Length: 410
Image 1 (cartoon, helix red, strand yellow):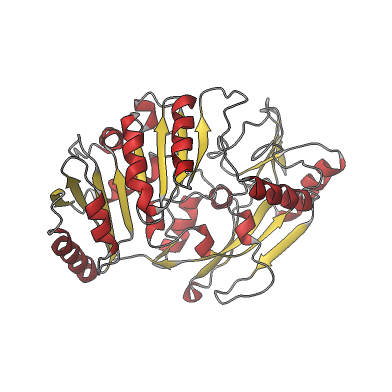
Image 2 (tube, helix red, strand yellow):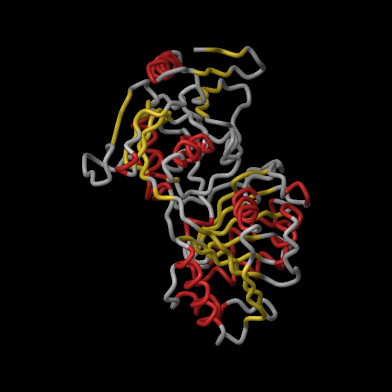
């Protein structure tokens, strides 16, 4: 175990037993600490005291078990996402979740922050790939749930609690994940619209006989950021829809031809363009990276201090995106799931978008901010009943309130 003497104490346990010891000591001494992986997603939620000790899981980075024929892998939570993908690629496999800053972001940190991207449209999110895990709660007690096989019904599905908990319920030390084969091909079809009239196209896409792995709606402000990041030279001025397909070359070719035939009858479409294979890797990378916290390279090119994520009914996505566009806010929407990521310039814009989302029975959370908050400006708008249950769960797993106190609620 190593400890780096800096302004913020960073504890780097080398194994699970050391994590247990450190958290137990913190509990006994009523000394709060922050559990983190690569530190890329610590801007999410309420700001924490920067002087709090950091318990970093980056020293827990081993592969525990990899029965590739079973399409599962068990790893320590501090392994970086890039290292995990490199290990899987040796067997022609991958974890099909889009995680930004993969060279430094840990798998446990991405799961705890519930980070996912465009492929979540069809291939799923962390909830679909976490089979089992080990973690240490706020009293220094090691607990486990799930298992190492796909067909597993042992115990309560506590994994769902850990996803998106931001280290407030426990320090994840190990996890077992389901994986998938690497597809032979990946291609994007870009659809542009007349006067940003996207609703007819999205309605037609619901009825498609094809299976897109992603369908991202980007407004004109987002396209400007995308072009700055990847030099893709995508036409600016109106919204675009990026539809992605993955599989064998034959599967991808057939699906792209089929969806073009299906969409040709939609009068609101201005053009459909098949992007080249050379453009595909860079486009996936930009879609993954650019709509996260304002420290990312894309957002540095614009006057955006707040990053947000909205969750709406899929039918309400076009209306929300138009409203955000009128406020000069870049947005990227996952059209099937109703998740929308974007940036805005200040808390006033964020509050207006939050109210707009709530009017449609949706929600909006501020993921990151470079602007100071006031008492009336909160990153989350939790339902009171949900907040009550969150407090009760927190009390059970962290009765001393030592794990990132105040991160998700005050």
